[in-house]
Image 1 (spheres, rainbow, N blue to C red):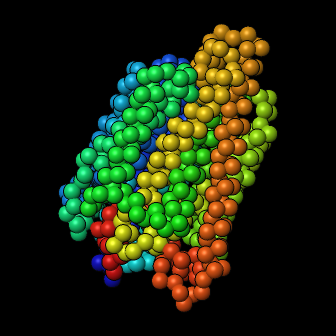
Image 2 (cartoon, rainbow, N blue to C red):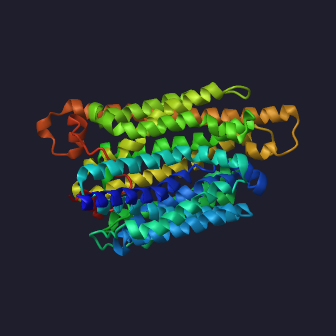
Image 3 (spheres, helix red, strand yellow):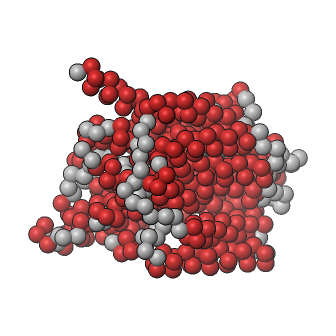
Length: 524
């Protein structure tokens, strides 16, 4: 009995150790939102550099998740966790003390590379900690809620630190957590290796990462500084590399992304649901953080405090969604998520240059419900729609969609806001934080604030429209298939999912990156 209790205690302590890096990886996707005005003051980045500071981290994580999942299978998950955590800590220190925008971007990329090693391996080791299926499901639910909470509390934690310390403090908080992990992980965690020995296709990794990098550079440059030949050529080269990547995935035996999975429309909707909410959340979270400080003139502490209600709603929703889904079904939950997010985003439209706090709180609270649902159900919908041998690829795509959504939201929607500011604002600087550091007349300053608020409104309306459209598409595909078939004719698990709403495991497998991971989690 005592031995069993000691084993169980060791397992839960191991989970706590794993949750540290998971929380950090999620937080660092959003921790700089409130810090950008301070970073602008200290480092004077250009408009496109400001966007790269924010989303280079997410690009690195999203581009390398699947590759590091395969590497972990071959060389060991715990080993990769230890190496990744150490690099993450070093990158955090370097970024905190960066003396130029270029250095900050470089260290953020390094942190992203390390973060890509942490996420896939962290969940895989839970299979060795919890052999009982029910306790393992509880642990993975806590894991998923922690990841969702990290995105939400990043700006809040940053706001509290920025009230008392310089901007680099929001990155130095990673160091003690990393040190604790490096000390305790060898004691509490066991090694995990996947069953497969498939190597990493380096060409696929390089073409996908380079294609994204060049394409987004062109978008950012055009948004900030208008059209020019150099960035356009690089953008076309990026698109060409992405095309090469896509063709290669269809030809090689072990692709980084299995595009044949997208033949299933239910799977496609689930993956887009993994991408779009993170894109909308990251872009609006960054823009509203700037809006509260630079337009309404709130202090960092006040802006962070106003983010608390939305963060609480998001976190609580992510925690309770698995229980609610057992009653309403996965497809209903997914559809609800999109329309709730759209409603919340539309509540940002009445905000103005003089008032808007109430609308901001209402918007983040309402949208937080949809965000919490979407973070919890995407992988649970995507994974059962594919054959068992492809479950790892499906789960990998679900997580990659989340991370790329976080990065591309700022890259695309943030660039849209920057372009609108450049076209409609005073001819001084391409972003509001830069403009406010200049000597402005009251009229020019008000013009700048109005132009930024217009950009926020357009971004919110655009994101809301996309969510509403995806919600309507989900109704047509999910409900349409459910109405048009009977239970007896469903061999396709995707169709069974949308018609019978089977009781799926209430866990989030979005961090699983290989079929070996899925197998280890299903043992017992």
